[in-house]
Image (cartoon, rainbow, N blue to C red; front, top):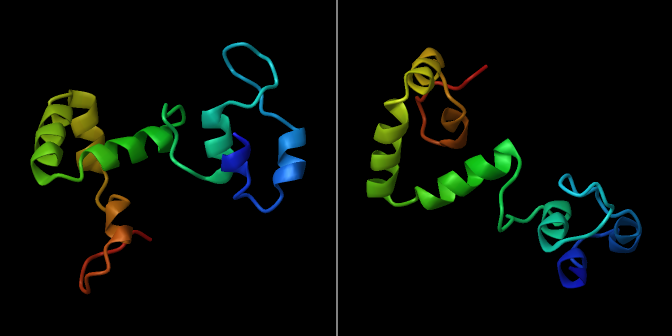
Length: 103
């Protein structure tokens, strides 16, 4: 934990205020809590953004991405929400000219 937090500019101040463990209610540092504080990927994603990033990492391979997308789009609510979003966030991540960007 200390090695992870050493990369944070205000590590000493940060260490003094451990985060609350949602499961136990205790204020305590864990490896994942330190990684979150340092902005690193965690071993166990908890937040929506951490889970999405973990899925993106797993789906870097084209075959995995295709299979995952097909499986997820079989869920009616997921497919409906995905198709309703005209310009998903991934457009903002592309640097190709001529692609529409979300406003």
